[in-house]
Image 1 (cartoon, helix red, strand yellow):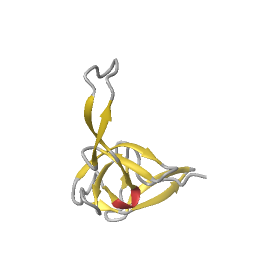
Image 2 (cartoon, one colour):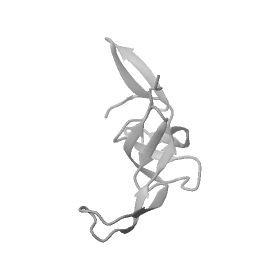
Image 3 (cartoon, helix red, strand yellow):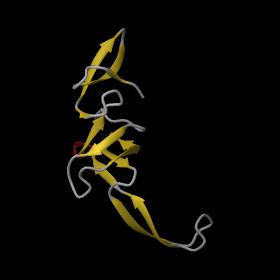
Image 4 (spheres, helix red, strand yellow):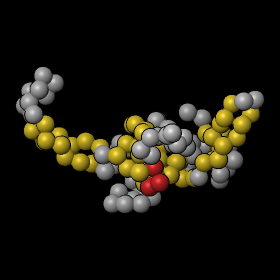
Length: 107
């Protein structure tokens, strides 16, 4: 069974470990099964592509690679600081909560 992530697509995150430590970016994709996320302009990789209909020239394409979710930290939209994420249940709806300022994290 896949673990539920506290970081979702569209969230702003800061990288806290690895070669891109300190960079911030938006989460483009999240893979809860592998516990990995793709963050824009982080962990850039080169991919060799064959000529295709979409890319008739082919060549070397630079694209974002995945990064483990433990190496990124959510940036709270209200206080603007990287923070841990708590969960609160109100009326059967689960909401994410900033551990620093205590406000709800809306998507």
